[in-house]
Amino acid sequence: ALFGYLGGWRKGEIISLRWPDVDRRGRVIQLRAEESKNGHPRTLALEGELLALVERRWAARLITTSAGDPAVTDWVFHRDGQPIVDFRKAWTTACARAGLVRVVQVEGKRVKRIPLKLFHDLRRAAGHERHPRRRARKGSDGHVGAPHPLDARSVLDHERARPPRRHQAHPGVRGGLA
Image (cartoon, rainbow, N blue to C red; front, side, top):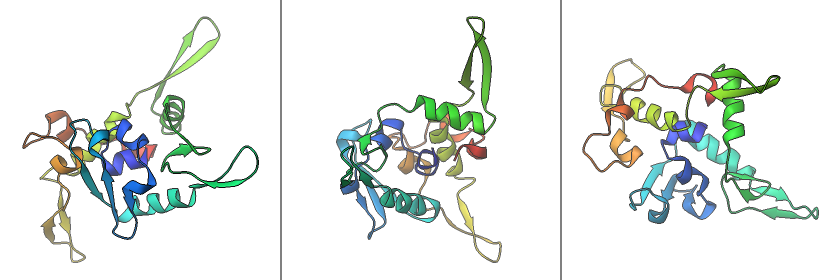
């Protein structure tokens, strides 16, 4: 979830990420064209929390096989070395921990938790954080400095000059999900 919020990538783009796409020394991640929705490759700068997240994932690439042998997985995000295919249950758990679920009773006793946020909301929040009105960085003296190096269009991979309004105006979802 944190990668989705910080990077603004689509779910499919995140789960397709492999270590050959990550340049830790150059501090960038390359999204391959074949994994991008519109077929264009993208580059994501690694800095701050995103860099720290990638470093934690780097340590997690070392796994133990079912035979007990050590191995290294090629996937940045994986379960026991296998690529993640579906994470709806994990997303529901994260939403529940953040207090963002609706609990409904189904078939008498059975209870179902329904997330109040979509994973895609993280992408919208990333666009909101990079909106031109919010992207100026404040220096240590409190004055507004240069614009943020990553604007919403480049991060979200929109072909239009302005991202759709739904990606700009979202109030953010960080509270507890990241």
